[in-house]
Length: 300
View 1 (cartoon, rainbow, N blue to C red):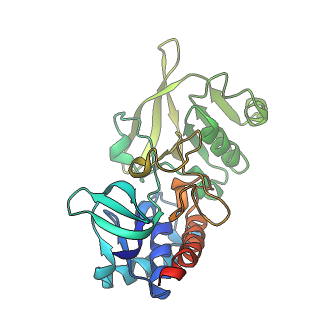
View 2: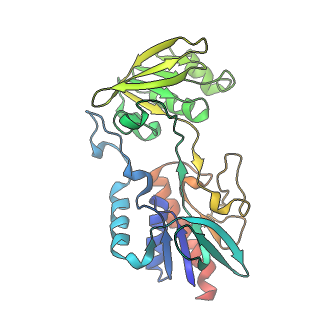
View 3: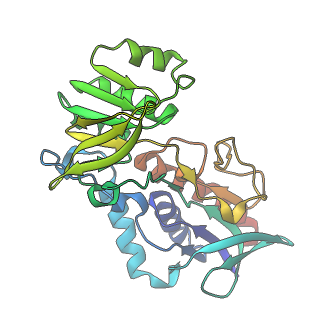
């Protein structure tokens, strides 16, 4: 039986696992990849890696460490976490169940795809899902944001502080009925295309324009220096569905020590009700490993 199993190999999961190893815990990290969303980077002619604060050096360091320590990782998928007596059994997709005294869920959140022509072709080449990470690079640029809720409004507002023009495609009238929505509607350099939808992404080497359709069926082409799809993230919580408490967005609810409502189950990163940023996830992974160690200490 393991002392601790970390589910997820993104920034939070990597950090939690490395911290657990250094605490001499018998730990296993289970994930289908290493690095999570840091494996995806927006490419544009004027963007260099050093310009974006993403904590890539730390993620790469932990990733390489776990690639070397192959006994501490399993490239598989956890399908269900089940409490049994005073420990947990994890049902796997491609291997036998494993048992552990404690679990850290760090499975992240999935971006919602729109499944329109050009989306896959230009993904990370002028088209991206994280405006909040790249907004400072769009000084005096024209940007298009596609989305219909709070995340899209927040992204458009941040881009509007530096960009020369922002197109916001898709928000409903209801989504705009707040301070942020009113600010965007009043901004001269922001165009809000209410109830529009993305039809196609066009370009050459990079995404260059978005074809959008209005509520009356008419189409229009928006030329941009960059485009962001900002739909609500879908937390990957299927393995603990019905076991731990989730918020209205389906994220795992944690306290200030990354504990869930179930003793022995902790969570960190984008899967929780915290900020969706790589640097925050790195810190949250370490923060989850420490109370997990304290929880396990009487049994070691």
